[in-house]
Image (cartoon, rainbow, N blue to C red):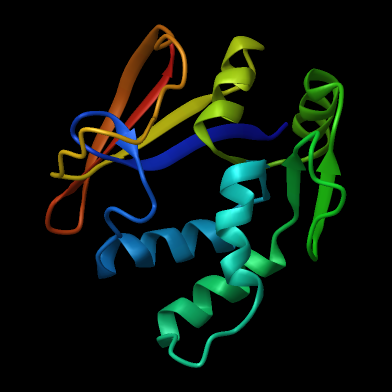
Length: 176
């Protein structure tokens, strides 16, 4: 059975914003390795549209960015949206019955399925489907943006913390 993992970069004040700060080389290497090892990803519409950036090559990309793009393209993606009519390569649109679809994915697959997007994570948390939360805590205060926890923080238990590069700490929690 697959494990559902919600993990994102987050500021000290609890916000996620893909344009406000980026991972350093060590953390980006971690994300490349994670994308390679992942069974797939479930995205909310907003984050999926941001991540579509990786669908097409860009001449200015570094070797690491090309490596991440290849790993991201290879993994299956399930996109939860009622407004999208189609999705890109290697992606499946999920419109209704989120609970049944995600329970089915967990039952049919092994490994880790990444969850992308705070609103989607809130819905999956409310359904009791997220197995692990990974906060990649950056020493930045944003004061605005989308909160990591889109709803009330669920009861959690810290299981580990890891230094990821020079200044980012990964906090890993499981439901308490």
